[in-house]
Image 1 (spheres, rainbow, N blue to C red):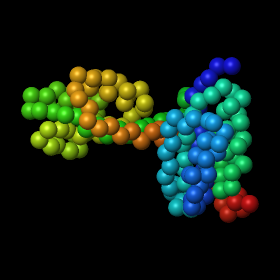
Image 2: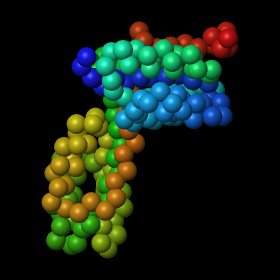
Image 3: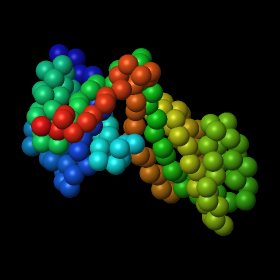
Image 4: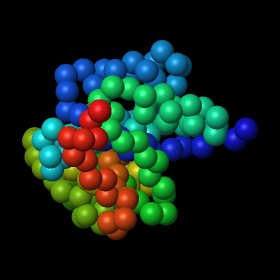
Length: 173
């Protein structure tokens, strides 16, 4: 079977240890997490977790079923590429002397990034977008020395209102 990449969106109760239980499930089963992001939703009792993973159809189906069984998991969905919006944040610290700064700033401007810190020997850049945009930006920085790089991983939401999940206390049990 062919492997594919999938983005799972989970809505979970904002309880102690939930992220640990989810990552532990992946670890115990030998599944890989390509990226994971988590943050509280508009309702502070609920956390949205976005997990990017890969596998064949059987493995991905098994992951979905196993995650759905976990206590505190309220909803599990696969975000489809064509009907969702995905974004990632990257912060990149680049070594930059006075002669290199303008070139780095020009590349950053083209990608609608921001210079968020300037030091005598470096620039720190913030860029957001889909993974392809971040990867293309990093490729253009290939001639410069990247000192540090931090990427958040993908966050995503389905387009429109048809896929909005409304949770209430009755959904908890």
